[in-house]
Image (cartoon, rainbow, N blue to C red):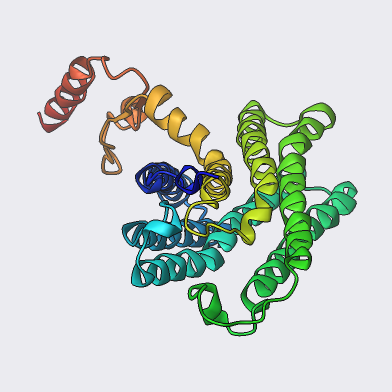
Length: 332
């Protein structure tokens, strides 16, 4: 047997993983900024679910930052080419980025559920209200269970980034099973968030703008559901033999799902922004004239008290000249 043939080449997937992670993080953060601009300045309707989305964006940035440190230490390369210090640092930062990473794709789904319940907004939808929120409860519970098993299965958590140290680790089948349950449920939640808008469009009489919102949510959630399904197929790599190389596709699919659900949670901001940028024309206001009581021309000025001119090209000079002429006539 040729031993050298079994040794993989020294390839580095780290830069590709870093690029994908930060590209998605930047794009999703821009959408969060647009949402805040719309809710804070255009509609002035900031609420608690905006804070949830901002928290998800911050957690996503933290996760990407930890991943970058892990990649700088050798994550994305085969473990046999790394020194002991590089292995420790790469695995340490790849482990601690998981808690904020899990919460980063769970929180936006809470915001999406709140949005759909708000659009329904009637007593007949109470059953749907409890169903949608119950989905999120199960999602968070399974996420906490999976990550707790991941941290505790080798007794000491430090064994996760010191693979050569002696440690008695439990059978990974339990961890893989719970991870499958969580990954499958996450894909199911994304699928419900993608298909539920069909119910809204079919059964409820809603405005055109709201239809745009639910269709946009449906599209982004469908893509997130596909990413979640891909992620679920990679979950056995929670117990990899090549711990700095094998989880590559698991990490990519997780980051893509996170970015897509954050973007889906921000789609309600788009219609108002598009309306403001593309359709709203500047308004020109003629100063109000408040004539003193007893002026002979007071009734003649009633028609000039305030004008909202939709077409900015309208020439207001004749109107202003007319008002000035009336003032001069009264002074005489």
